[in-house]
Image (cartoon, rainbow, N blue to C red; front, side):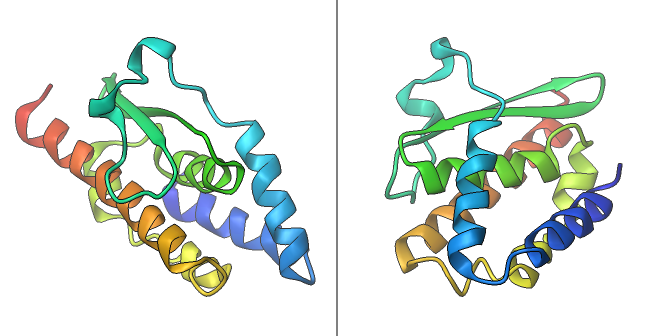
Length: 140
């Protein structure tokens, strides 16, 4: 499935809910299905800078595709990182770098997050794209 197809799937899922309480509950549920980071990777160097909550993210290149795992100590943030991993994990560095991630705006996430959570989401996206750029540049 392409990044855009996954984004469209998420937009459809969020359209089911009539209010933001339902969407927040769904986001929390998504966090429960987050591909968990190995405990050995929950180190300070894996923390996302710019997040109010603690978010650890690890990436590795397997067969030309980047696989992300993560964890957070906050349930909403865990759901946000689960969404980003669902969209970007398993894609090539170029696909990740070139992704527009329009779904974030289309599901209304940016309007319904506190400024600190919005900054955290942007920091997650930035880190994922930086990882993709590094893998592309250095063929790690």
